[in-house]
Image 1 (cartoon, rainbow, N blue to C red):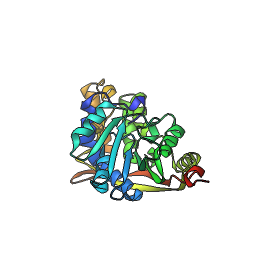
Image 2: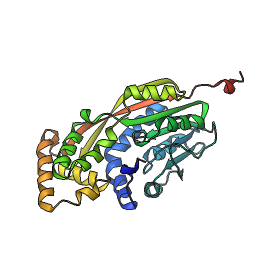
Image 3: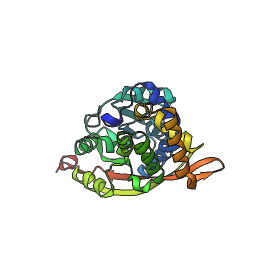
Image 4: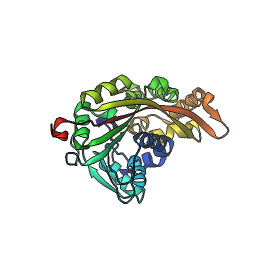
Length: 277
């Protein structure tokens, strides 16, 4: 999952991603995405930019033994973490979103959670998703909403800019860079999809503390390298500043905040050759 800047190297960050970020963000988002997609027993599901595989694993539970789930990602470390994460019957394949390992019309549902924003050629990826779908198939996408409606991350980006550097802040801004609701409607329609519906999903996020929020985010993403370049005193100042900023989200159990994402679902739609016209 992710563009060049967002490719974590090796299994360490990928395992941290699975351990820390999946329970906090991606599991709840995946549940909402699959609910919107109305996954049914026996269906064939292809999860694109699967990361460590939470959508694929949850989809496998829903389709049951008569169904089939394949998870694809360009990142070997992510796929290794996905394979190690659980016993779900999922086939893991290394593949780019613009060249999917599936035959035309062979899939009932394509999912992509928090991957489309990193794809350089989004139209090509969406055309490829439509290619592999059966005529009555559908696509379900999740894309973070803008950082301006996710204030906990505004706070993190601000301290990264000031204490580490704007390059570090830019790394964390990238996942929030779109597409937005209008873009999703436009891109999906242009790719040939029909009955496009985009809604807001809200994930309830909790961490033991602001300090742990920062530590886990850094450990699980490409932020690890730039943050490791500052000394302990500066790191302590950065953490203290974040704790002050996130004080409104603090309770006796740590910090809690809502996190917003776009959820989109669309039907493949029929082509003339599908109906014999």
